[in-house]
Every structure is written in C-alpha cells, then in structure tokens.
Image 1: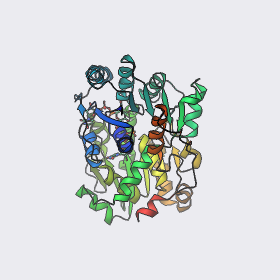
Image 2: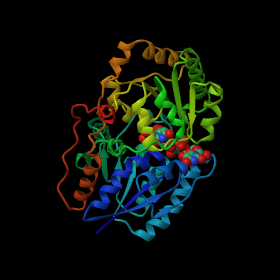
Image 3: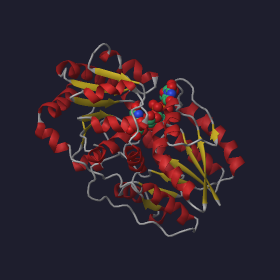
Image 4: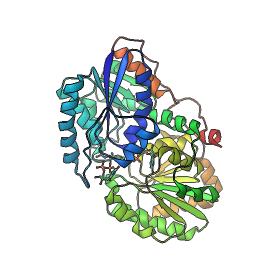
Length: 390
Ligand code: UD1
Ligand code: UDP
C-alpha cells in the first residue's frame, strides 16, 4: 500500500478534497491519511462532518486575525512532525491557500513528491489575487503531478515550461462534491433559510477575499443596502464568513434591513440548496464561480480579475468589480430585464462532469505504476443541476 497524505486547512479545500479522499480510500493500492492544518476551524469542521471525514492529524493552527506568516510557519512546524511520523509516498494539496503552499513546501523539504489538485489557475498578475496567485505559482514549482481542472489551466502550466507528461486534466472536484450533496437531498440545517422557501426572488451574496477587505467590501455593503431598499420584494441572503475583517465592514450597512438575511457560514448542503433557489449570485468566491454556472445561475463577480475565465467566456459569469454604482446597476439590470437574465441563466459545466476525483485517483495510481493514465477531461454538453434538484 502507498501512503498518500492529503493536507488541507480551509473550507474550499475541504469541499474539493472530500471526493478525492473517498476515491483514495476506495483504491486497492492507496491508503489516504488526512491531515488538517486547522487554518479554518468551524468552517472546516462543518465540511469534514458532512462528508464523514475524521482527520488523522489536526495541527489546530488557527489564531484570531492570524497573518500569513503565522499560517505558514505554524503549518510548516506541525507538518514536519506528521511527515516524519507517516513517511508518505505522496502528499496531495489543493488550490491556492497558504495551507496548500506550506504543505507543498514541507513535503518538498522531506523530499516527498507533491500532487496538486486544481493546478494551473492563473490571473497572470503576481499580486492579484494576493496571496493566492503567489501561492499557486509557488505550489506549481514544488509539484510532481499537476492535476489541472480544465484545458485552459493545463495550457497555463505548459506555458510556464511544465512537462506535459506531468499534467493530467481532471475537471474540478468541486462538481463531484456538488453532485454528491445535491443527490443526497438533505434536509435544511439552518432554520434561518426557511425564509428562502417563501421568497419570490432570492439574491445570494458572498464576499470574503483579502483584496476586497476595507473600502471595496464597504462599497459592496452599501450597494447591497441600496438594492435592498430599491427591491423590497427580493430577499438578499448573505452567509457571513467568520473572518472579523469581513463582518466588521460588510454587515453594518445592511443592519436592520428586513429583506437582508445575514446567516452564519452555511453547511455545504444548505449552500447548494440556496444557490439552486437563487435568481442570481453576487460573489467574490472562487468556488461559487464554479458551482453557480452548473446550476444555471447568473453570477456577478465582485473582482477586477478572475483565474476562472471559462464561465465568463460561456456568458454566465460577468466581472463587475466593486464600484458601488456599477454593482447596483448590474444587479438591477438582471432583476428588471428578463432577457438580460435569460441570456446569462443557461447551465454550463466548463469546470467538471462529476468524474474529476476518479481521474485524480487514476493519475495517482498511474504515478505509482498501478494503472493506466486516465483520459483527460474535456467539457461536455451542459447538465442542468438546478433542474435535477427541483
Ligand atoms: C482563506 C484563504 C483564501 C480562501 C479562503 C476561503 C489564505 C491566505 N487565504 O482566507 O485563499 O479563499 O480561506 O474561505 O490561505 N476564522 C474563524 N473560523 C473559521 C475560519 C476563519 O474564526 O472557521 C477567522 C479567524 O479570525 C481567521 C480569519 O477568519 O484568522 C481569517 O482566516 P484565514 O484563513 O487567514 O483567511 P481567509 O480570509 O479565510
Ligand atoms: N460555501 C459554503 N457555505 C457558505 C459559503 C460558501 O458551504 O456559507 C461553499 C461554497 O459553495 C464553495 C466554497 O464554500 O463550495 C467556497 O468557499 P469560499 O468562498 O470560502 O472560498 P474560495 O472558493 O473563494 O476560495
């Protein structure tokens, strides 16, 4: 048996690695060992519990308002001990968080090979988004097996001189996770969401990115308050990230508005339901940009750049930035103009077909000579998950 250490620390990594952990556990030749850094706590534990994952090691590194150096050094120090104890044959990391980079670095210091899930996303701007673009470039430099979600991400890696033999296009495992929770049809966890069932129209809003902290996020909060007053029949749902830097700025402008529902971070199955019930989605999240197009929901992205151009090209995602007037105008247009909404509301699945984890596990088995190289993912005709949910 080959020991595969799967290391993650935040909510999106947990969601996107859950199908991979399940696939590794089902493989005859591989033994997954799950390690969480605990960069997130409640938001991470929520996901592990939904997918029935009990980490073998928990580094418990979260500190209130921890800076990047704190996340990196605590992760590195904890991982040294785990790597020494487990002597893994491979270390799997995901995405572009500081946990991902620190885990790839710790593995490399221990001379363990690294497989990077969701490899090759790029904006091309070194500091935008910060620190994610740095984290993913640095992680690529430390990786042996690059698991690119889309043909575009593969091209990004090849343009940086990475050997094509080390790149497999898998699709994004977030679609596997989404299909899994949708098919389980779980009851609502958060009673606050009962209001969504009675609402005529719902706009889902999330914002947490570091580049949005401060004035950009304040502008989003003010835009949301204006929209709530302009469309009292619309319910705006805002699942608030636990980061105090987010809550202190985003929430004050909408306080007291009856049609803005602020919730705690939602369990992933509630989040999937909420996305499916929404008229449109306003977000700066990476994962939500991948999920909502599969559900046929228009997405307005509160950022200037994206490393996920596929759904923008397909016409279901639009970059709007955080200018207050622009956000108000763009949301208004989709609420008052059925044609504009319909143009963006077709389901597209450029990010995956629900088989990404199978390809990830196949590529790892192939690395160890345990099986054939999986066939690369190519985006297929769209599958409308919202229709399947109804
Ligand atoms: C991190 C990632 C970001 C990713 C995001 C997903 C880095 C540098 N950033 O950003 O790429 O998009 O996760 O959500 O890796 N907190 C809690 N409990 C939790 C989670 C967070 O209290 O369960 C609070 C803590 O005060 C913590 C703060 O949120 O210090 C920020 O967490 P951190 O992981 O540093 O950054 P995120 O903004 O969540
Ligand atoms: N998500 C969730 N509950 C919430 C908000 C988001 O389960 O209250 C899910 C969302 O559907 C997506 C992932 O968390 O799968 C995205 O995480 P986040 O936006 O924190 O990070 P990013 O993707 O921007 O790195």
